Length: 389
Figure 1 (cartoon, rainbow, N blue to C red):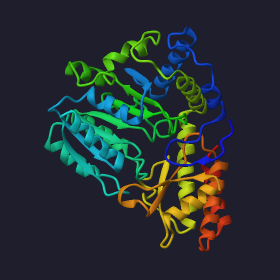
Figure 2 (spheres, rainbow, N blue to C red):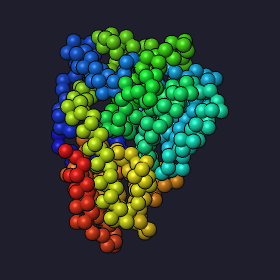
Figure 3 (tube, rainbow, N blue to C red):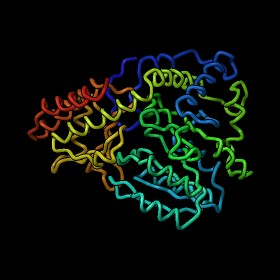
Figure 4 (cartoon, one colour):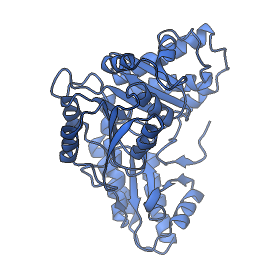
């Protein structure tokens, strides 16, 4: 299936032909041994990617389902949660915590900035928290969390580390076997979805628990969930021939193929490629007078939120770009109309992004602005060539 448009929003992201081909396979029963083998392989691929010593869950659902599964299985009503938010999607944990009667404190950064490590340390010194949520790359702002500093600090204070990797997994390092200064200082939970850096159509919620997080689930006893209770899913993840809820058969085909591509490229190369793409896109767009919301020091590798120059109308800009086959997303909340968001992750290629830089320049010219398209495209290509092997 040939993509007719270049989908450069923060998710869903472009889907490759081999993934489409896999998804178009004949639908089989969810207990058919052939499907069971594919599902089992997809679960093992997920374990290989995230390197957990516990359990992984690959189920029908969105990233929000993954967030709920991570929280409801580890933090009980009345226990305390610290939410570190770098934007709209970090704030979503607030509503989830309220829904389950969880006590919480929230550290919200100014959009485009990181929550300071000093603020986090102060909060951790003030209260005892069962868990801390960290959005690795916030889809609304393009800000990345500094896990190298946050994880050891949180673990030192005895809390679980829950990493929302929806817009980071398979592009930014989320190695659950990594020791952050001590053998016990590791990420406890990573949650994500299928449709962003993994590059598969939407519809899968993916969560990994380490042994520490699994013990937290056991300590809670009964949880206020049924579909999201990991006790109901562990037997299926250990043997997909078992049944709890019907899996999305064709989407599992697609996911298994997408994960095959991820693992074949390797995380070292993927991390370098995504970092190079992000920096190159932002550098090129600065040439057009467009300003990234997040500075390079805190910018995510997977998407960027870009502020318009004075006088550029958001609706006109994105509509004209769409006519050229390039789809970008509007900004959220108070930035709506003032910025757009561009994804540069997953199956996106250097040629795709160079074409997008050129098309953005053409639209700006059509809107009456003077820009140097060739200089911007060359800057993009030079940065990518220097940093991607």
